[in-house]
Image 1 (cartoon, rainbow, N blue to C red):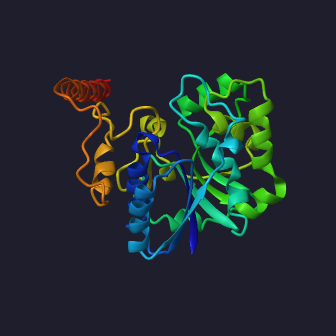
Image 2: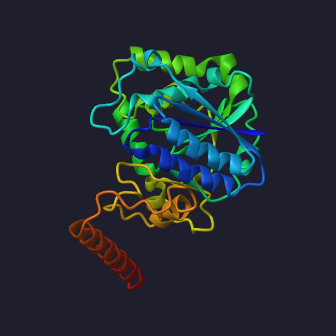
Image 3: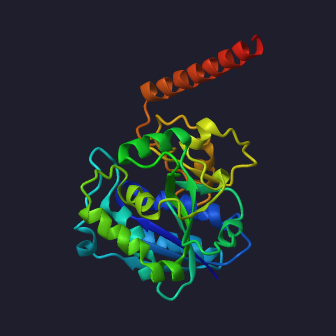
Length: 296
């Protein structure tokens, strides 16, 4: 079996978003997966639903409840919507102490391809494989953290982990220590810290395996080329105000789970109208840009 890891705090109905991510993995794979779910407060009801999704595809699941004591020393970046549960990623090598390799995914992701293709990549001597953030996001993060211009800043929402090597070199432990002892403001929490500790010492994956909002603006991949959609930022596809071109993919997979029929959050006539107007404005701007370039 291949190992897949999630980290979740069940506030704001994140269990159903995890359900959409899970079903997108399991419907697009031929492999059997062992799914590890590290959580703070996942309810028994949601565990039952998630377990039913996984067992239906003849895969296995293991729930790992993380101690609040383990997370209380961490602080999230001010002004972010994130929770201290994100730091639980740093304990994955320890929690999966009998495993050699695993893929970690955020819960705001839709997988459109065989995930085993990413899993089976040879990491060689690298501890992790990660995918660079969009160029604009990289630039702002490097300026914010005073990092070298030649450095590649990656998004930590999709990672392939060589667990044996991580236990050996203790780089996740060093990241944890850094988070609690640095004077730097880690706006993006352990992602910032991981980028500082790993520097450029990671295997660089293709953008199609973590197609973020930033990457969408800079790398115009076709829908067929995109293998993982990652809904980064504070606007999510389950929000009525979100106008992502890949919003429908989330609902397509969510409606294949027991959460089928759930409505968009924050839906009202005013919000729907504003979303439509924003989309029309963006389309008009795009058309004008193409027309201008055609005439020059």
